[in-house]
Length: 83
Image 1 (cartoon, rainbow, N blue to C red):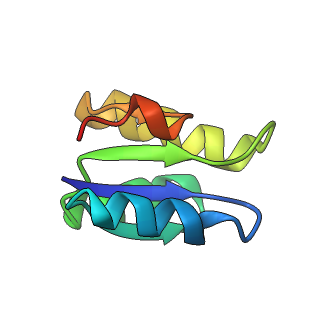
Image 2: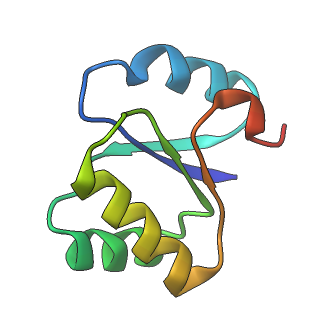
C-alpha cells in the first residue's frame, strides 16, 4: 500500500521504518497548499494518509480533501493501518 505521512514535526522516521518493514511504500509531507497537495497525492497513487500532528489545520485540510476526493482512509495512529 502506498501511504503518505503528513507531519509538521520531524517525527516521521520511526513510522516510515515500521511501515516499510510491513511492506508499504511511504511518501512524507506536508505537500504544500491543500488543493495542489491533494492533486499530487492522487497522481502519485497514494492509498491512505497517516497524520502525525495535533491541531495542524493545513494537514487536516489536506487529509480531509484527499478523503473527499478519493474515499481513501486517513489514519491518526500506526495501529489503525492494515498490515
